[in-house]
Length: 108
Image 1: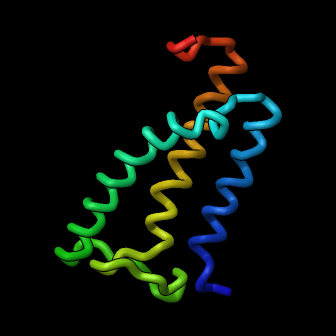
Image 2: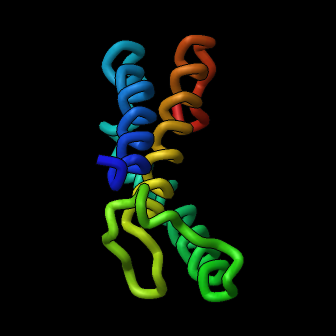
């Protein structure tokens, strides 16, 4: 079970943020193209950053706490999921605050 520690933390983050979608009707997941355009550059930059840090020996992952699924360069699946889950949670949080304060999104 310890091999899923990282994944469980990410699931906890999602559980704590996903309720904002239906309750506050923030429509983040409904506007999936916009979300994808937000996530893609972030994920690419940080995946490259991590790969560089791993190659230089500056960054490691505890194999006892990750799934063991590794991408080329030694990047764990768990870390790639982090680069997707955390920005999704951040966008959900941002949009929830915007919705509660009734601030326009800029395209409305």
